[in-house]
Image (cartoon, rainbow, N blue to C red; front, side, top):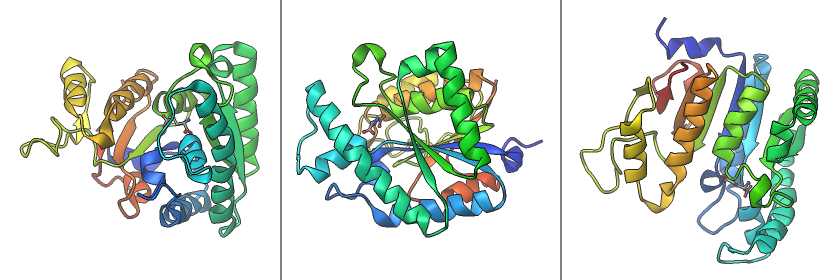
Length: 264
Ligand code: GLU
């Protein structure tokens, strides 16, 4: 069967939302984006699809709340901003999903939760129970306690680990670019969007590291790491532009959007 059409059979999807699409230029949360996300997810939940969100935005939300203009480098500063911004983030999610009668739940994980068997199983059970209760789990890294040694470090890799943890059958990485290109589309006119990647080989990694715009620094690199990981777990990934209208519904309807990385 066509691999896009096969996505229509998805039963449990993990959707990862990057900070770049959650925030407006002013640094505030983009409420229209949150609303469109909630509308799409509500329609999936109505169809009894299981949905788990992995959302960034804690540090960015903290910066806005405390009027910090430049992203700090020092760990305690980042930890404090994340602690403050995470509540703002969840408050916004609560509001937009509340309109659809959907309860949300916050789960903050560190690397250790995913590496140590007992904690891994506990996290997994908690998420399954939330799904059974039809609550939307919203996961982020626990940035306030996660210093270098115990950090996953980015939510792309975290979402791949979560996809495996709960045995979802699709990972969607929503970002601010249409997918994976052969070069930086802002710098090279002939850059082509890759519709399907069967194998994340060196060439694909090279394309990603060629992408140096402000919007995708490191961004595509960690996305490909995540997609490579899920592919090895036997799960496909779609990397697509989050601001496109109904993007999640289109992906799950098997439409050709973004880049599909096939499962191994
Ligand atoms: N956990 C970080 C935050 O919520 C974001 C990490 C990432 O975007 O990869 O601010």
